[in-house]
Length: 158
Image (cartoon, rainbow, N blue to C red; front, side, top):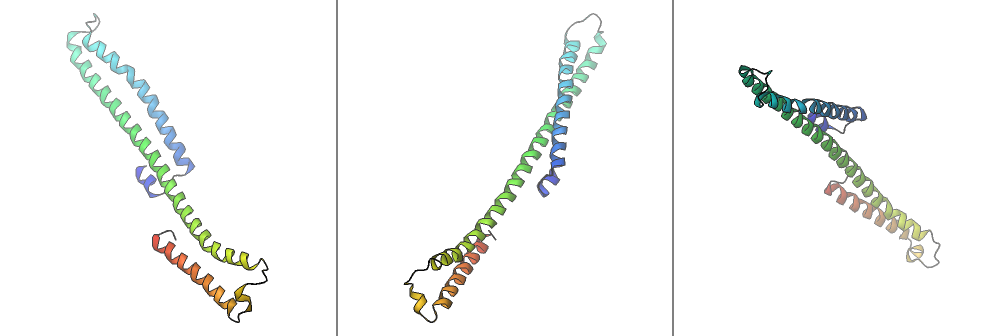
């Protein structure tokens, strides 16, 4: 399960499975917990129904129950780690998508801003009277978009 979590984001079915496993482990822990006290009392208290020769056996049973309890706790921790890791993987994917969207938005914002300015129908824009004004503005827009694309690609956002 840990390998699946770190390989890709978890599906809804896998998350439900994690919850079910944690719930089952909690039930098992609640069932095993009282056994430790019962075995300890059978081992240490001098009860008339327990023979002296049986006490070491109850000590062994107590040790086994404690071992099982520790294993249950460690499995619950592993499941908690798997769930947290799946959340982190999902957040990392969302962050990467957000970076890409922000990068493309910044690149598209340059020609949008320039087109917005030229779409205001000013009477005196220097490039309107110049023969190559249109080509220079288009070239500057392409250069700005290209520079942004290169910068975002270099930083790993695209």
